[in-house]
Figure 1 (tube, rainbow, N blue to C red):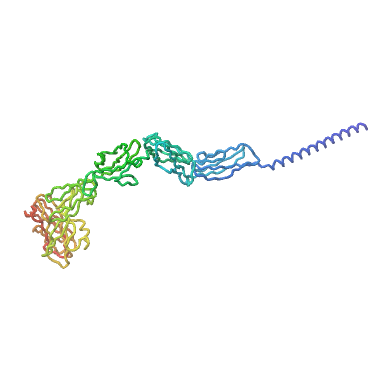
Figure 2 (figure 1 turned 45 degrees about the horizontal axis):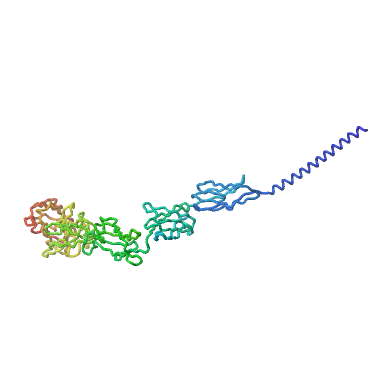
Length: 544
């Protein structure tokens, strides 16, 4: 019986230990379960004040970073430093494009999409003055700033002496939006004011004059405009043209009293205009700047002188009966007087190239062209009209020689204004006498006398051109040249081609395909009377 009690005691002790262990484990598990539930309720996060942002180039913006249940140093990065940079949340736009700005702590991060666009407009440098004048030891200040979208932006202005300009005339500084200048020595100089704003280089020129303000120097007899004193002269004096010299009336004062300091007189080009005993003398055409200056105090005036040629040398051809040239000096823009020759009417001035000239702009040669009187007869009636005859009175050099009787006829209307003869008129080589449609008889022309003995071979066309209806039957016939028959015209265009070579004449009849040859009579050959062309019998209108 004692053995049995002992075993039961061991079993009870083991059971109690097991129960205590189970209770202890349950308590521990319960405690762990409460801790996990408490931790899952704490949220950690990081965020930015903006998730997307658009900036112009060189513009800045600040991103704010918000931390939730987390602490530590924030790391800022940009996905493309060429587009935008970031420093402690301050984003600086650089070039147009897209990038991402990231803020991170450990594995937590937040992002902002950045879009950089080009500047909508360029900034500009604004200066209240670009030219200043001050006394020696005087200080003068004026506003200067950079303006962008009508708002001032912070910029530091700097100064560089222009190349070739004199130094130590003035001191320049910049502070509080103003340029401060102080005169150091008498003289003139120029600087470049420059800065860099929004990535763009800006600059402007500043001219400075340090002088004695108690002195004044002016010209009393030259009108002054925005560009200063201006004077026109001529190198050659002609009637109604500019003068060749001028004496400026100089007014030099100190505190309203006549100043006695010495003055110097200089010219930028003495070959164009020069000083002689206080006078400005024109030398040749061109431009020059003449100065009067008190060098001691840097006081001066400038006279901008324009010297015109004054007169051009113009050679006039075909203006004299003996054939010699005339030479005239003419003012710019002027034209020579119309020449006069007996029996001729002046038609105009032409260049050697045959172009009409209406204004003299340089030394040149002019060729006079004339309209000459030609007698035309219809039946027993003789008419006189003027034509422009290039060959007889002035063919330009290089132009094919031909009789060119081109111009107005005074019998009825201008041929360009009636019956559609404009195209033929433009071809030249004819004169015209319109006739009533009922006319039938003799028509012809007698040209002015011309010395064929001194002429090169001369070729021209003639005939009855258009308007002679029913001519197929040979009604316009025969044609006579200097009294010699050259056959019948049954063509509706110029049917004859004549060549006069010395005393020999050959006329080709296109209708007949035949050449007629004869000699000119002596009086016509030597220019004692004019060549005559006649149609013995014609109908309707006549053009030769």
